[in-house]
Length: 130
Image 1 (cartoon, rainbow, N blue to C red):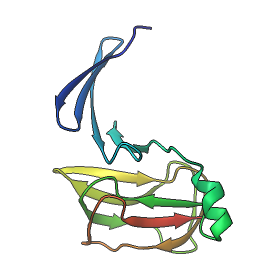
Image 2: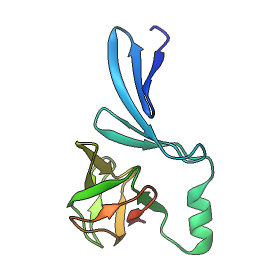
Image 3: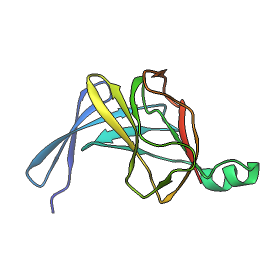
Image 4: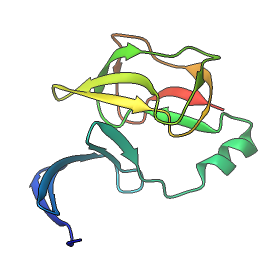
């Protein structure tokens, strides 16, 4: 395996060269809460234990938020829906790309805070999971 080579193409846009492949990764958010869109998936870097904090406050275990300004194209779940790790919950459109917001773990939807056509800003809560 070779060491990845990362090249900044533009603000929030990077080319990653690895094992003879070139991939484009989009990054958004403040340094303490970075989001990356790569290969059809959205990833979030966490710097604190959000599960413990949420549990202590009596809130849902996982809150999925918008990684960047976007339009909600599809909402595929409702409160009470049982989801599996990787299931698509919400589809956003940003910068003429569709962003699938996927379940990070198996769980149950406790709340949906968006509807199709909504314009959302970064960190807008979309779905809560237990």
